[in-house]
Length: 184
Image 1 (cartoon, rainbow, N blue to C red):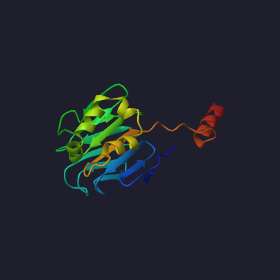
Image 2: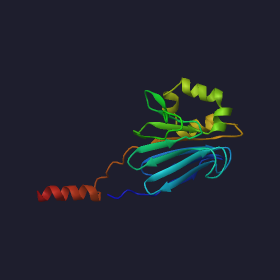
Image 3: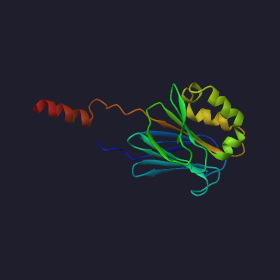
Image 4: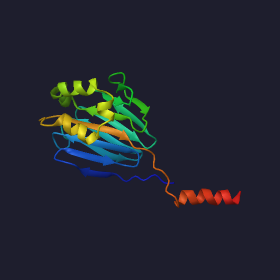
């Protein structure tokens, strides 16, 4: 079975956007157009989260691979927050040292720019206090819209690993398996 490299990107509001492929869903919000970049790579998606438009400058880099692994590089920016239904931790665990982990379906990765953390201290504290329900139990786009409501600067993303697709009855994969079983 060939893995699709198609990416769907749709605008949801003035500043919000949702990007999806077969493995990942990336909800984004940015006060300035271009402060969050999402690009397709040979092995998945690459996301840059910063305060200024463009690929340079201070930004957190997130690489999302088709195998379900994620790596975060935050050399001079805030780390991401990996949230499951029972716990939360920063990623990377050691500031300035890139880290790669396997991410399970349902887990979420919250990435905020430096300006967002500067202007969102109360919102971030409330999110952290109510973890994990607040982050995992709410639609990612709605959560970002709530956090960034009325804010003049900053950007953020919430990455979710999508559940694996379930084969549809009558698909080529099922027929090949059935044909193999008949021959044995």
